Image 1 (cartoon, rainbow, N blue to C red):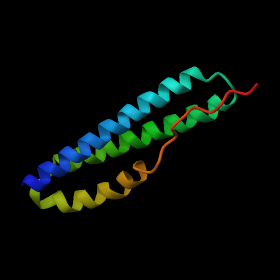
Image 2: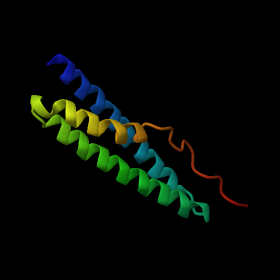
Image 3: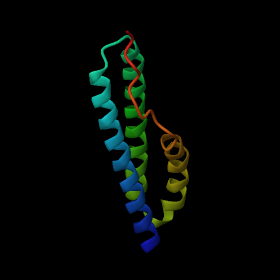
Image 4: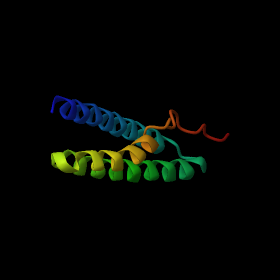
Length: 96
């Protein structure tokens, strides 16, 4: 059972980290007023949707019984790994 609790704690921490990253990206997007900001806004919205989908799958995993844990864990892994890929770390440079 401690393995399950540890897994949940680790994943919750990572989801919170991604949520923090999304908030930072949102702040950067608000500061960009160039044409590039449209593309940046689209990327931000896509990342937010993906984060929400992974959060939902994770909640299903957390609430699953022992008998469904392994199956649910496998369902979470693929979208989790997509979300874990490197993200944008800075806003696009404004055009002169």
